[in-house]
Length: 487
Ligand code: UD1
Ligand code: CA
Image (cartoon, rainbow, N blue to C red):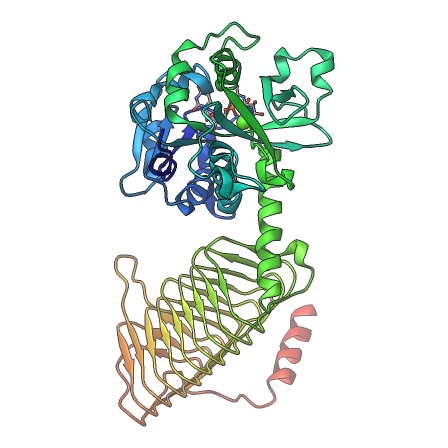
């Protein structure tokens, strides 16, 4: 049999129909998030990395929701309305592999830490077994070992509890896989576990998949039983032990979810550290999947970087700051306890401590946003300062403007939002109320405490206060009045 063409072909089946009972959740298990992405995303990513002919998802419990999160062109879905077991799930996908002269890789949707590279090595191993390659590969080229039916990824773990155990015959060939609940005390002591990741030669799998039964402790159709069935056909399934057991951590409850998240987070942080990011107290820092860091970024404790966030070279992020879906430029100083969401902060700006930047705000180059300043859906021009206690909402603020402490853009009348325009070099006195819509001209000044309700022309002073009164010797008058009353 010519094998060269067959082995270039690979299909992937991802099992994602289960409810995840142990999560005790209204949300399907595979949609629970790890570093801001649903668990199924990571399994899909590893599968896509192999560039297979096709990815087939078996969905069931809340299938519409699960499908929504799997956005992948050309993916196929198979629906499993009753979750009768992993073997049953694969049997429903049979139409996709029964006439396929290639390999089928099966992945559990709840094993998010698996790496594409590990899967690729497993596929290569399977191919090598079939081609009988080895030390003398060239001697055997073109030969095909017809007995090789599959490879199961396994790992040795200190505590195998809950996983299927790999029973071998002394070689790498697996005799059977026994589930925890069906295992004898002796089998329970086996510490080599089933990862739930398998590669099968499709025609062999198709031949046995409908022969599974559910005579077991859980009354389920176990995929793991295909190994026994293949043996009965005289076919062999091999164990491939992977060195890092964390890669095949099965996430069955929320504590395992937390563990998986921690492991992945440490891998990302290691990656960024090696690429030039300094982390202080890294165990307290949170970095999600879509974050992009540059060299010489420095991150202090309890920082959270979420969503699609990028941080430019030389930027320092102070303790307890949260940055989500935002682009931060180079050499920016984010001082502690600052929150930035869906916004842009340009090079050399200073933001915080205790600042809040949100809803498409743009803080331009060299601007300085200080403590207790909130900037919402506003542009703050180059080298403009708003250093203390202000609310800047729906405003367009020019360059070199000074925003005094206590300035507020009164942008909302209870029905609609209105815009405030402050032109270059304007000086907004402390405690100015800018009642929008309103425009402050270039170089204009507002007197502190003023309520500005009309546009201010360029270079003008706008002041709105009662005239100040001085009443001389007021204290003495008060005291005399008080004494009279006491008598
Ligand atoms: C499974 C394996 C076990 C292995 C472990 C690795 C079986 C019988 N057991 O056990 O040997 O050590 O994974 O993590 O396969 N699913 C469906 N339809 C179903 C049942 C499950 O799509 O009817 C999906 C689930 O959504 C999940 C995956 O299959 O993504 C695994 O199912 P789960 O019930 O978690 O199997 P385990 O008990 O962990
Ligand atoms: Ca599982």
